[in-house]
Length: 95
Image (cartoon, rainbow, N blue to C red; front, side, top):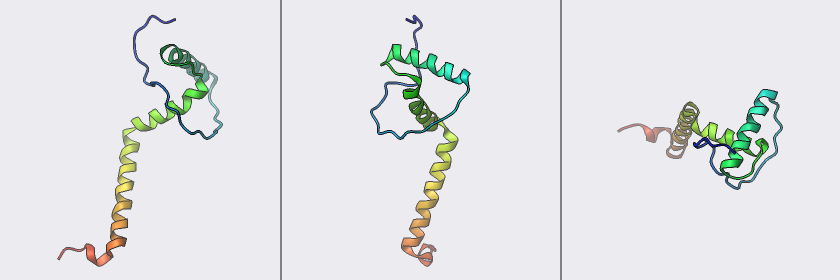
């Protein structure tokens, strides 16, 4: 058991619906994921790399500021376009 004190970036796992996906990775990355899973299991609940990978990817996507900014920009553009359609093109002009 590890004596190092610290938190992992990934916390306890939520219960979620899943979809099966197959991925390929280097042996070195798989080894690193297995080490991470062992550390996670000591801090939280038993889990192997296969269980952790989706949660790690979700955490990565949530923390990517550039991706969030692009998504927000696209959402704003869609909302603006929907407003133009609802009001009609001439009703958006001032005066």
